[in-house]
Image (tube, rainbow, N blue to C red):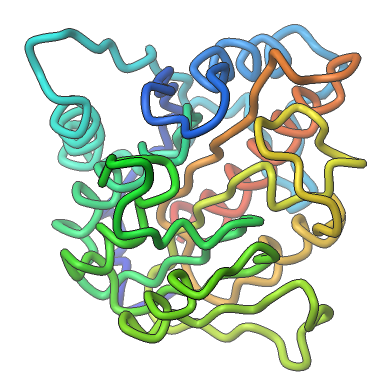
Length: 279
């Protein structure tokens, strides 16, 4: 692959980074437990290490499972996450993060913007997460993309799966020129086309709760598992990073969502490796 935005040899490996943080959950805690649950399914569940795109995740040349981010009271969570992600990027490793609530995406993207100033974000979610502030918290899991757009951390934000817009969120979307593809308009009339590097932020509640009951905010009428996988596979540009957030193991049923989150982790890893690292 030859792409002007990702130079050959610039990045050599993908790190799976757990971010066990849910202090900004606006409804129910629990997503902090998700990284260890997903890693356990990947290591000990029924899934093998092959992805649908033909990438073998046992190949340590391209893939490693990293230690979870460790938080302490002396440092703001944003700084802890940004520094952790920055260390991997500076050492030629792209990052696939397992949250955690959706507030973790903002500091991740602060780190990414330093390496990819022309970044496009594909955000899959039931919610737009564009609140200026939610319950008095500007770093709530309902607010990360307001912070991202304020700080100009991307050149384009494309949202898919949205089905809970209110007047404030619509005003925010217009203010920041966000491209919202609502579920009431599904399926998309035209395929999504991207230029330059793409970062995928995948909130598990973007998927219909029939497939993903293990979330704090169950919002019926969402995407199917296959539709999300196809969205990922159809990205026509290098995918340079991703996060999977808002899986709440406390709300899961018979491990359904854990299995789904592990499957999506595999497929996102495969897409990043196939589109960016295997040049």
